[in-house]
Length: 205
Image (cartoon, rainbow, N blue to C red):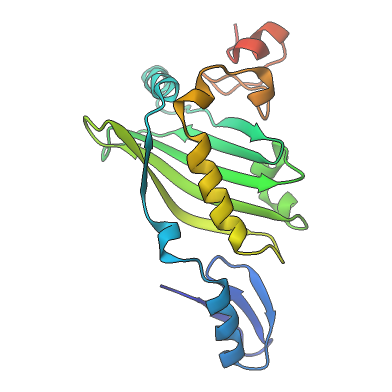
């Protein structure tokens, strides 16, 4: 597995996720810093999670309506944690969602729309897929990539991964109240919602 990169001309070293680790006098010191910043193998392993009936129903409905217009649902689970979930058409699995989890104190929808807005923030971000094969009773959580802000400890990745697994549970999706919505957009088509009744039910007229 790649440890990171080292620029001999500037002395800058980055970890495998592209985070700047600092400037080092030689490649040996840079490699030591990369080793320290390396995520454990367990972080990248797939994990089984419970099937979430509401998300599966929404997935089936939106794909049936229009395969080319698939909304990006943004759920807020805590003041500092939100997950973007987008259903995808798949020929490999029975079901597929592409997701981004973000943990930051300055959480807003802009963090997902304009990633550059995270530049000066402390944050941890994990991209992951949720998928299920035919007749599977559970879904599979698979994280292919992760990013963090400068000077953010690697341990934050492990905490965020565990938080993701904890919130991906059917009980978290039984009552979708407006405060769970990071931004008021329709679950079915992704268009912005302004009417209070529509915001309350997460679906436009």
